[in-house]
Amino acid sequence: MNRPPIALLAVDVQRDFLPGGSLAVSDGDAVVAPLRALSDQVSLVVATRDFHPLHHCSFLERGGPWPPHCIIGTPGATIHPDIDAMADLIVSKGTDPKVDAYSGFDGTGLAGILRSAGVERVVVGGLATDYCVRATALAARREGFETEVVLAAVRAVDVHAGDGDRSVEEMHGAGVAIRESV
Image 1 (cartoon, rainbow, N blue to C red):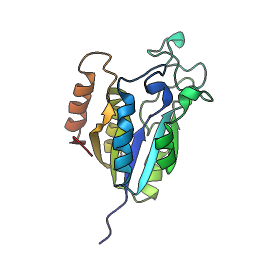
Image 2 (cartoon, rainbow, N blue to C red; image 1 turned 135 degrees about the vertical axis):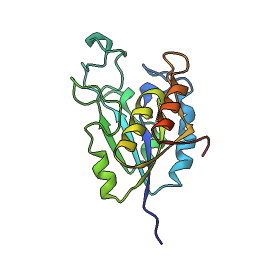
Image 3 (tube, rainbow, N blue to C red; image 1 turned 60 degrees about the horizontal axis):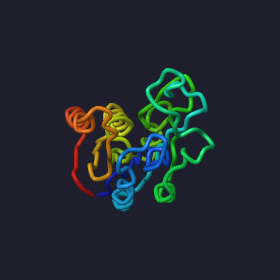
Image 4 (spheres, rainbow, N blue to C red; image 1 turned 90 degrees about the vertical axis):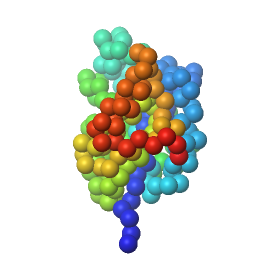
C-alpha cells in the first residue's frame, strides 16, 4: 500500500534571518543540516520566504515591530543556497505592503498546492520557532494536515526569554507532533 506524500516545509531560511542578517536568529544557520537530512525523508520540499516590499507594514518605520528585512530584490531576501537547491517549490509571504504574514499558508495557496499533490502530512522546520514556524505549523493543523515540528531543525528569536519554548508548548497543545531530532 502506497503512503501519501509527505512535505517538508522549510520556513524562512533566508540571509536576513541568518547570522549577520538584519534580523538574525541566534544560531539560525544550525537549521540547515537537519533540514537537508529531513529532505531525504519526504517526497516534496517547500521553502517559504518572507518577501517584503520596501515599505512593509511590519517594519519599524511603518509602526511595525521589526527592522527592515527580506526586502524583494535584496541579498537579505535570498534563501540559503542549500535550502534553495533542495526546494521543489518556493512560496512567498508578506508581499502585500499593508498585511503582515507569518504563516506559509497566509495568502500563498499552499494548502491547495499540498492537497493537489496528495500530501496529508507535513514536517516543519526553519526560522523562527516563535514566529513563522509556529504560525505555519498551527495553520497546517487548522488546514487538516498531520503536522510535526522537528526541534533540531528550528531556532527561536526569543524576544522575551522562553518564547520559543512557549511556542513549542502551544503547537503541541494544538495537536502538532514534536520530534527532538532528525
